[in-house]
Amino acid sequence: MDSTRSPWQIAQPFVTGGVAGMTATALIQPIDMIKVRLQLTGEGVKNAKAHPIRLATELIRRESFFSLYRGLSAGLLRQATYTTARMGLFNTFLSMSKDYNGNDKVTFGQRAAAGLAAGGLGAIVGTPADLALVRMQADGMLPKSQRANYHGVGNALVRITKDEGALALWNGAGPTVARAMALNVGMLTVYSQMKHKLDDLIGPGALSTFGSSATAGFFASALSLPFDFIKTRLQKQRPDLKGVMPYKGTIDCALKVIRIEGPLSFYRSFPVYYLRIAPHAMLTLVVADALTAAAAAFKDSRSV
Image 1 (cartoon, rainbow, N blue to C red):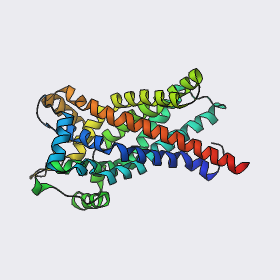
Image 2: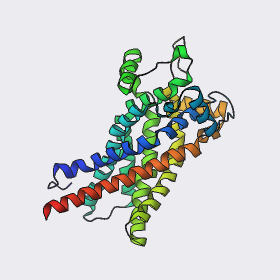
Image 3: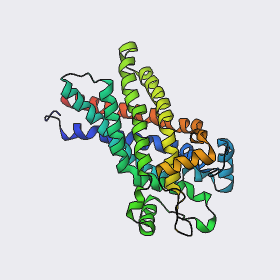
């Protein structure tokens, strides 16, 4: 990598990625709440059906409108760790590829490798916040006597660590990493490749950014949903009275879901998941591009 780059130039993709992800999460959180509830509804029941609008209405009626934002603090922390790392690393890896190639061109294979590596590493960093988010969103589904009633992400992380051990914060890390790698290939790799092509075809601008991010959102949703489904089930689970977990791990969870609920249950929440992933991807990428452009404009104005 170019050793002449300033500390801000190195940090910028991490900062813009994190701020963009947190902005998108603040707007999309209610959809994420419904997505998690859909994935947990009908657990252990074959061909279970749940309507997202009916579920949202019932959630508001039984709890409150603000329950749609339950876990927002964990969601923001997740973006501050996971998205900061994955988007910063992705852009860093692309810069390294350009230096290696000796020009500004990056192959699709290099983009895919950058997406896989950045997604996996970012997920490892963000798994504790992700687990806290799922626990907070699923808490209202438990009987009142079993609810943890977390007061925020800090309270959730401390209590989970105290009650279950520090390693419990990485429950579901396997599918979380797989989900992030699939999501990054679908989101950042496809976006980067599509934007490069559309910029050449119609020129840089809002249309190119919108078209690229919409396409990236679809592929990100389709590739990552099965892993997201398993991740949610593993992170929500708690031991029964005998200390036995419902699932032994990723493979056991996947096989039990296929055998008991049917393979299509992995995509039960696809419409809601797409409505959560696509706008989130689009907002994150658009905000990140806008912040990058603003930083470049500020730098130019200072050099005049």
